[in-house]
Amino acid sequence: MKNVILVISLFMLVFIIVINIFDAPTGRYYNCRDIDFLPDVPPKVREECRRIIKERLDEQRKNPDRTLLHT
Image 1 (cartoon, rainbow, N blue to C red):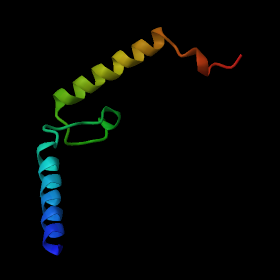
Image 2 (image 1 turned 180 degrees about the vertical axis):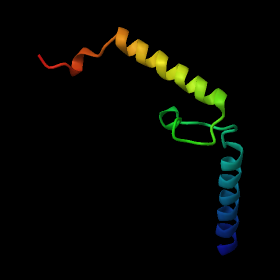
Image 3 (image 1 turned 60 degrees about the vertical axis):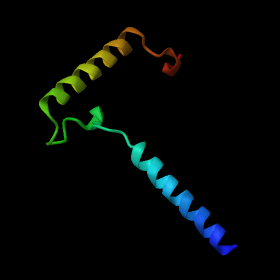
């Protein structure tokens, strides 16, 4: 009985390890919020982050959230 539990436990452990290895995201991800403080960020990433932030700010200016206003 101990052998069966050991084999099942090992199988589950190997399965979880394999799932985690193959499910890992590829590439690099940058947080645009901290982009100006990180020294090792490529220039293209900085430009793209600034463009994304600018677009979001412009969108917020066009459509302000009225629920936060006090009347």
